Amino acid sequence: MTVDLMLAAARSFLFVLVTMLPILNPAATAPIFLSMTEGASPATRILLASRIARNMFWLMTGSMLIGSYVLDFFGISLPIVRIGGGLILASVAWRLLGATPQTQDSRAALAEAYTLDHAHRQAFYPLTFPISCGPASISVAITVGVTLHDVELVMSAARMGAALLALALIGVLLYLAFRYGEHFLRLIGEAGTAVFLRLTAFILLCLGVQIVWDGVRELLLEIMAFSSQPTTIHTVALWQ
Image (cartoon, rainbow, N blue to C red; front, side):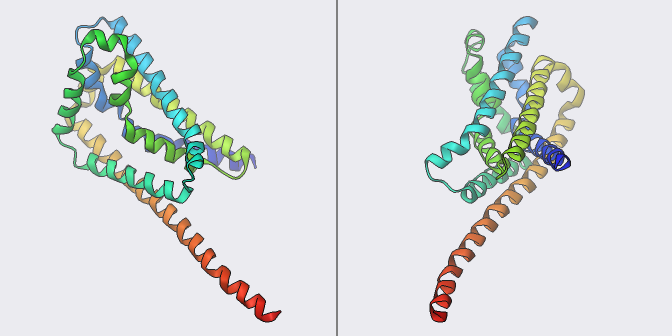
């Protein structure tokens, strides 16, 4: 049982890391953070990077842990959530595969709408939301949280714990990317950033298709089970 829990936790850790990291993408948002905090002291940037990383972690954690209960309140089934979330994943990955400099320009235009003083006072908006994590990442986090749920409470706790560790690691990467953004971008360069985006986008596309298939398969099984019920009842009635 312990080995099964460790394997499930490791798979959940890798699943959340590979799924959420390309969407949050600290390397892509670091230039926007630098442009918004241009002229700021190193201490101010360190403070902002720490606050943004914490805000991102709690926002994604709340989406994973509470999102499923919100869906239950509205009566949305898990297969539908998997299909919808998988489609979101696939669409985001497709956009990343065909990303152009216009995507960065649109984000930069959003960042330029806020002054430096405004960014200092409000680290959550827009530095955390929607620049660091937006509606798409929140939707995916809800889907991931639903996917990690299990019938057994211990297994579900192990998966969720590993997912939170993955989010914490992404938060650390976000903090490092924002704090050392200039050195990070100089290290990987434009070509390295483009290659990184394409590879992670392809993995994300495959994960999105897999989640959609899981949801479709569950729906098909439910339809088959429902369609077989009248036949079973009719057979029992004939024997009686």
